[in-house]
Structures are given as C-alpha cells and as structure tokens.
Length: 56
Image (cartoon, rainbow, N blue to C red; front, side):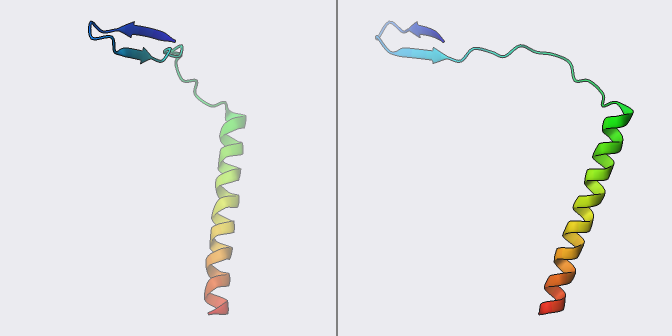
C-alpha cells in the first residue's frame, strides 16, 4: 500500500492499481453457453411468473 504524509501529519493511503488488460471476445463455444444459460434463465423466470399467477 502506498502511503503519503501531509505537512500536518495526516496519513493518506492509496490502493495499488490492478494491472490493466484488454477484454477478450468470447469464443463461439462460450457464446453458445451464454445463450443456453440465457434460455434457461428465461424459462425459470417464466415458470415462476406463471406459477404465481396460477396460485393467486
């Protein structure tokens, strides 16, 4: 941790900055997995909403 001291004796702490790296576009396999997870999420939310309507 980087620390400085002002002339009044006040400490000022600075966090270490993380390394910066460019984002990597997802591979076709990852894109298919994300689409599958999205479809499952939509089905889960739809089933929850329909169940709530059915019991009310």
